[in-house]
Image (cartoon, rainbow, N blue to C red; front, side):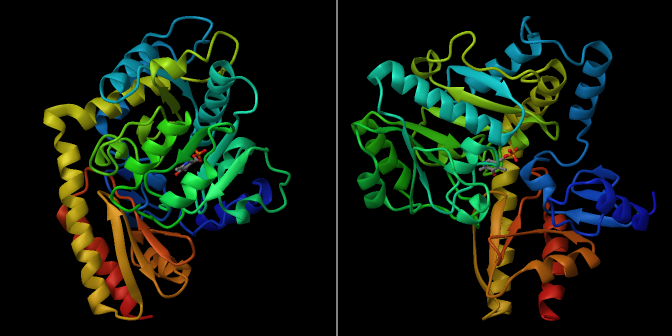
Length: 400
Ligand SMILES: *Cc1c(COP(=O)(O)O)cnc(C)c1O
């Protein structure tokens, strides 16, 4: 289809939920995609942190091809070998003992919320069902995940929200202490870094305090690693930076290297609250998506985890290059922040125009929280790609 026709028929046939940009990629390899007009773009959005290994990583492609020829879907009424293999990989490389598979980040958070409430009901009886989450957070668009999300702009028009959610400022230990009650709170749900909220990195010992508050009040710590997990920050999971362990962790985005899969991971003690019939997902962990996720995680871990090392080194390089932009554009580029390859540049003005100008110059980047440019290239990215992206951005900022 020609670009004009794609635009016209999108308006005619699709519900209008996205403010889309005028690119229709139809081929991708690594950190590059090619549009309907065969124009090349360097992709620093990566499907919003989904394409951790870049587009069409050969190992993921082959895993999908092989599995698709053998068996695509079978019900969880039966045993699924790939699901077991993937769960074992996740358990062996995290705090968790057990895994439940679903299809997205929002759905993983729904599962985590249900698991926390079910666990507290069994362990403490009625009344301990409140979940404390952070202002400015993002946990997804379904009702539980939306209620957990601490941004009223996402709630607008969809009220009433699910009861039992309390929001406190992110990074504020005292506010959390006040909000968590031994009688009422079943869980604290937080992102390790608030990604959609503008790539907000918490103070260094925040999560140690969070862990302590949870422990003294009998509340579970749920970490939403939907965006930060799967190597994005230079560790397989971001909690490893903080010297603590959660009780429950949710994953999605990067987990399948591009295919839709989510997961709820938990300690054995907590996971026991889910018994047959209490929770389910028809597609959850089907053979095809698990094959893609196995290939993704194995690739991240292979050769002594060199890709995690690469993520750390390239993250440091990107961070350095973004700091140079702060010096080059005082008053416009205000600050750079992030961990690994989840980086941001905060501007003094809304960044939608910058995103459009970058597209015209062959660079895909993302704008979040109005004035924050967010960078999420694959963890396979190399220095010349970063330099090329920053130089395109720099030219665009010059012309503002
Ligand atoms: C993207 C995201 C979600 C929602 O994931 P979906 O797959 O879109 O439902 C939840 N939490 C965080 C931290 C995210 O970044």
